[in-house]
Image (tube, rainbow, N blue to C red):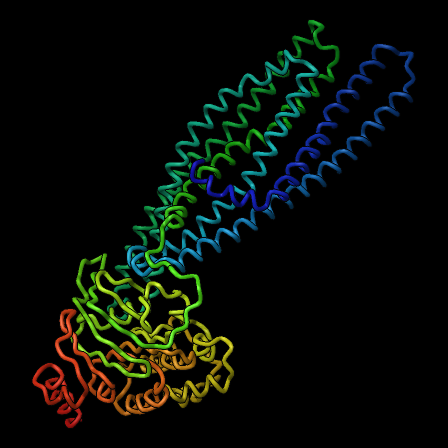
Length: 586
């Protein structure tokens, strides 16, 4: 129960609903106990008329009718109160489920890129769906039936004790056996439930990955191989599920057997006590049998409740593992930060934690507000890492980055990121309309702003060619569009934001040179007053920049303007001549 203690804050939040549910439960149980007592009185009345014929039959009939009416009335009242109890406690559990899912999702948003490198998407989805649902079963049905059981046991046993302490003792003899059996089974369920949830996450992760890469699988004709892998994983998961189900299935028969034994105990010892005269009426035995049967469902539910609690414990433990992680990137300044756009790197080095690869080594450069910097270099030279450090996706390992003269970690994190428009190398689009994908950069943008952004990204004509134009709904990850169209929609999304800093990470690699030229002309016109950094493999994307730096193995090996670098022996001039000759051949 240690892990489930995390949920106490939610019980505190909804304490009034919780207390009201307990009150409804207590009153409902009190009314439900009228039935055994009234039946006992009815038996006693029948015995009286059998022993004393002078008692008028009409008197007994009237008493029986009154008892029946009272049984009906109290049963209806108990039913209404039970309904209100369920409405109070189960609705409370739905509120807690809602809050917990939001808390987990918010934590997912706060966690850094390193976290997502180490954890698979399917597992993350399983924890926010399956695991949270298991926890809801604890805060809802499990808590409700536990309260119901405790209150019913307390009230029923008190009633039984007042009627016959000795018979009550006989009736409760099987309970120690029941408690021991529950303890042993609960321990086993906890182990098997944890294992099953882990395998469920594996299945979710595997299927999510397969669905995302289904085009590659089909292209390589690997359907049968992955089908076999899926069957193998599903079989393992099924085995773990069956192991759990086998243990859980022991509860029902065990509870019913123990209740049956209790009934036999009541009949046997109650009969002996009636013969001995310790019990004055057969109605008392009937009353006790009804009490025992009233305890049947609470006792039987102990197994179910115990199973739910153990599963919830295992699930909450998995959730807590993520909730306890402190994001590496923290907002160190809650005050509002105004970003104008000048950027300075001072002896910056960065090493990726997961691979221990040093991406940048003692990098220094400055970009003034309104200037354009182009970064070129071979694959793996550290170009994209520079952009990630500017937007604080990662924090530097060594050195410092300053924005407008302030160390980047001392700026308000959200103001910093809101001041940056970034077009990633792998353009990611949502399964939504093209219009909404562009408006992702500015939610309150007008249709005119959306169209202007699309025109500047040279994708407007393509969009107009679609049947539903800007209302065209894209497939997952923008699969409806070509690579070049996805990149241009992503550019439009950054442009419409109109931020002081624009970062373009090799975002024109999938477009032809003519389209690239048109986009660049538009971008340079738009970016006159913005700080712009363009990462590229093409000279055509870099030649009009105010500054150009060349990276190799995380170090700056050349820097200057286009005219300076083409006249200087090195990587840039070599690349320029190579791409110039390729263009002439085309």
